Structures are given as C-alpha cells and as structure tokens.
Length: 376
Image 1 (cartoon, helix red, strand yellow):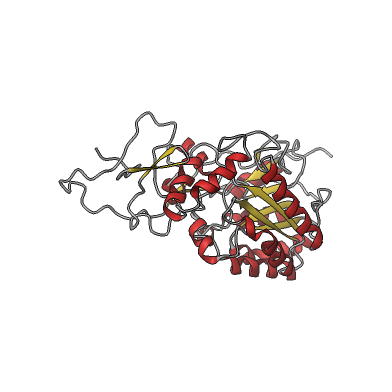
Image 2: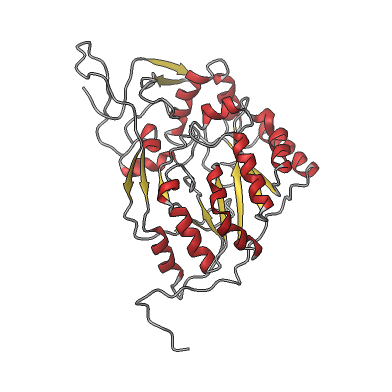
C-alpha cells in the first residue's frame, strides 16, 4: 500500500507511547519532523513501506510547495484570557522553519494535511492580505487595538523574502498609524527597519525575537531552518539601535534540554538591547505529542524519559492540559522553580516586567476606493 503521508519501518516506545520509525533521513533532510502521519480529520490512513519488490523506486526528498490561500478576511480574533492580544494576522499557513515543538502544527490538519512534514513543506501564502487588511480597517465599526503579527506561524519565514506579504501588511499599518506587535525567530525582520523605525518613534510597534537556545547545534536540531542564535541576537541589536523596542521570548523552555540556559539567554538578549522578556513552557497538544516523541527518540534518546517525565509532572501526569492560565506555564515544583529563576534573572537585568503599551489614539481610518463617504 502506498500513500503520501507516512513511511514506517518499525516502532519503539517512549514513556508508554509507541513511536513509529521515521521517514528516510535523506527524504527529510533539513526538516524538523521525522514523520508525516495522515491528518486527524482524514477518513483513511496511508503509509509508504517497502514490500520487498522495489515497487516504489527511489522516493523524492520533501520539497517546499507554496500555494495561494484565497482568504476572505485577514484579522483573526481570540478571547483567550491568558493572551495579551485579541487580534492577530498570519500571512502564511504552515512554516518552513520546521520547529519540532511548534504549537501551530495541528492547525495544518484542518487543511487536510499532516502536522508533520506537510506543515513545513506545504505552505499557503495569503497574497491578498494587505488589500483585505485595508478593507477591514476602513470599517466604521473597527476599533484599533494592537495586532499581533505572526501569532501562529512566523511572518518572516524564508518565503517572505520573495512574497513580501508581511512587508505589505506593515505598509498598511504604517499608513494608518495602527499599532502592531511582531513575533519572529528570523533575522529577516531587519529588512523592514525602514518601516518599523518611524512607527516606533510614534509608539506603534514592538518586536519580540524568539530565542530557544544559544547552542547552535541544539538550535539546528530543534529549529532546522530558522536563523542561528547569533543572527537573532544581531537582529535584536540592529532593531534596538534603530530605536525599535525589542523583547526576547524564550519559547519554549524544554525541561532537561534548554532550561539550564535561562539566565544566559536573558543576559545575551539584554546585551543585544532587549527591554522585555517572556517565556513559555513546552506545549504538546494533539499531534505534537507524538511528533516530539519521535524527534526525542532519534535526537536525544538518552534523556527522552527524563524530559517527558518532568513535563508530565507539570501537567498532573499527562503530556498537556489545555487550560487557560496553565497551558503556557504548567504547575507544581518544577514550574515554580522555572518561574522563580526567570523572575530573578529578569529583575537582575532590569528587563521590564510590564509590557510596553502601544498607542491607539493615532489611528487614521483608511478610505477604500468605492467606499461611501460620510456626510460629516
């Protein structure tokens, strides 16, 4: 039987869960996920295997495909009490950075794809994002609040170099004087300093750079196509020198893997110009729990049980509890220790514990051609 979603050669077991053997290393070279299991909404499960007759021939390596996303609206809303924003824009679906821990992976299943290798190779670009944004901002019912750019997938992933959708969105926000907060782990954000610096001078923008580790080898394993840690720190430096407020996000903190770096990461970010700092503990909802186990089995088999044991200790003995106020921090002794270390390091470095509030009073509603003019 052959299908495009899986390739199994056997199983292993980690912390009570059976882990499928990975897709051939050459086929997934430079990618994060080790498998490509069929999405949870699909009726049929498919796999690729060698039946001994060499009927499949040599399978091609996974290549990045970019498809057009015919979006009808662009501003997504949320009412989550543990998130600091109520609206966001994601220029792309899927992310080529390939971070194994990415909480956005399960969203790819809604498109009929796998949360594994499909997520980082089958991408969707919202080419009409800037046009949609201008139309939505022009509504007389729209009330400005900070828009989070890249809340789900990275707005500066590699395809942004040629697509320039994120830049087009920023041009609309700059023109309308609308506040925006950006989260990225890409140095490409420095390309748009010419837009961001004038916005920062008006109190309209801040940028958070995600740094998971300072270890280049670990970063390559966890985030195979993202910028290296030194490049992210250099991006921070350039942004700060241009007068753009910068924060560091240590996300995620993985027990027994990168937790020992908390103080070092904050110190390096502070030296690079960061003014704020935040963190998120590793989250393993839905398909991510299996994908992360597969990655651990191959990359860190010697400490897999330890990592998962500590993680489960923060979630009442299970991998993940999707409860507001709990899901990003966990609870218990280990979670308290991480929170204390982070708080003390932030205080020592004077990394402001209060978030910088962006201005909303400068907003200028755009006029879209064909729109009816007001009487007054």
